[in-house]
Image (cartoon, rainbow, N blue to C red; front, side, top):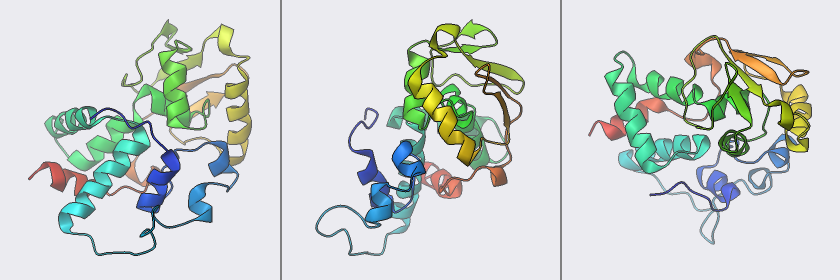
Length: 208
């Protein structure tokens, strides 16, 4: 299955949690989830009990939509996380957080991961001074991420930086907003990553 490109706020309403799929509307408290905190459709307000498989699938789908991965990409990510040894659930989240598009988002250069992915694929990002246009590129601690010189006047990026003054940036990155550059300082601890995903259920789903 290809990456989802449909109405994003319907996805958030289906799961009943914010997946940070909208930028300014979410930051301004005007998302559809805030106004209609129930699933879309005529039966959206009726809640049924999910099966164990349903709960596991929901957690995988939430992570997949939040980070913008296709089904195949997510399956490959799980296999890599499993081969790494240690806690597979944490490995999944750590690998997702190390993606270049996610780090661009975490640094405040974009209000959503989808916008960050577009910035990367269009060649507007440098990693350690070299152009990288692969959103899934895995950063290592200490690597520098910067917006290319010709893109620093991009109004979308400037607006994102203004909005993130209020919300702040992730603790595992350092950012110089004047030079539009930052450093991925370290892999975060799980307790620092505030996302509505129970990765334990994802591991159970793929381990069947």
